[in-house]
Amino acid sequence: MTLTIRDLHFAYAGDDILRGVTFDIPTGCLAAILGENGSGKTTLLKTINRLLRPRIGTVLIDDDAVDDMSGRQIARRVGYMPQRQEAAHCTVFDAVLLGRKARDGGRTRDADVEKVEEVLRLVHLGPLAMRPTCELSGGELQKVILARALAQEPKVLLLDEPINHLDPVNQIEVMSLLHAVTRDLGIASLVVTHNLNNALRFADRFILLRQGRLLAAGGREIITPETIRDAFHIDATIGRVGGATVVVPTLHGTRPHQHLAESGHFREHTHEVDDHVYDHRHNCEQPQRD
Image (cartoon, rainbow, N blue to C red; front, side, top):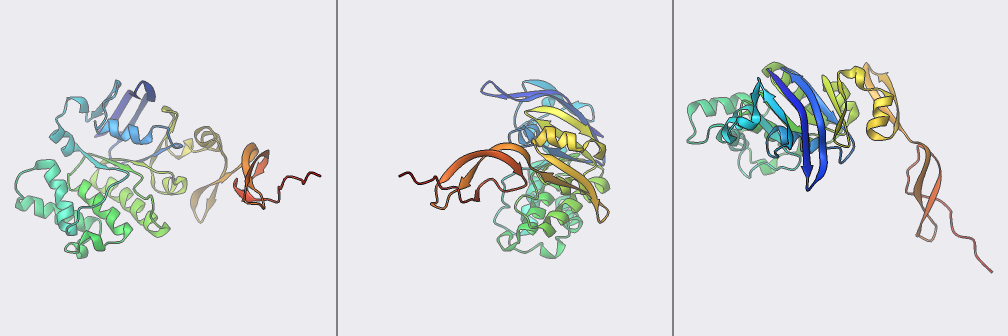
C-alpha cells in the first residue's frame, strides 16, 4: 500500500497555502512533516483527509483517489488525530469504541469489542480500559486518542503534533509507539512535529515544507544543515550523541531584537546575535540629558 500525493495545491481566500506538493509514503513507513509555523503542515494533513478540498492535485491510497470516496470510505482508510482534541468524557474503552462507530456506525458488534480490546493491548492501555478519561495523564490521553484512530483499522494514519505539551518521557514513548504500530500494522503514517530530534530518532522519512512548497523529501540523508537553514532560517549542527542523531540549533548573524532596559521599557536593537535569547535584560538605559 502506498499513499501518493501529486501536485497538491490549496488556497484560503485566494492565498496559496500548498503549492504543488508531491511525495509518496510506502507501507510500514512513519514520515515526519517538518517546517516552520505557517508552512502548510496542518493544511496538508487536512487535504489528505479531505477535510479540505485541494484546488488542484490528487491524493491516492492504493491507487484509489480520496476525492472519489464517501465519508464512510475515507473513515475506513484514514485515521486522523487533530492538533487539538480531547477524549470523550467516558471510559477509556468507550472512547476507543468511538473509532469503530466512525468506521462502521450502527450497533456495537462482538467484532467491534474484540477490535477495541486488541487495540488497547497494542497501545498498552488494557489495564485502564474501565478508567474514566478525565482521570488520565496527558500521555495516557494521547494514547487513547491514538487508539481511537487505530480502531478504525486505517491504512493511513495522520497525526498533527501528537507529542505537543507532553513531557520528554511521554514524547519518546508516544513516538516509539507510533513507529512500532506503523511497522507492525503495515500502515503509512504522517506525523506533524516541531521536535527535530524525536523526528530523527523515530521517523523513517521526512517531508520538509517551506511556504507551502516541498523543500525536500526522503530519508535521514536530507536532514542537513543546509535544509534546516532553508526550512527554519536557523543554523544548526548535526551530530551523534549516545548513538542517536541530534540537531543543535544555533543563532548567528545580525538580527533586530528587543532589550529590556532597567526601567522595564523595551528598546529595539540590531547587532550580532550568538545564541542568546532575544528578549533578555541589558543595561541599555538612554543616557540622561542635561
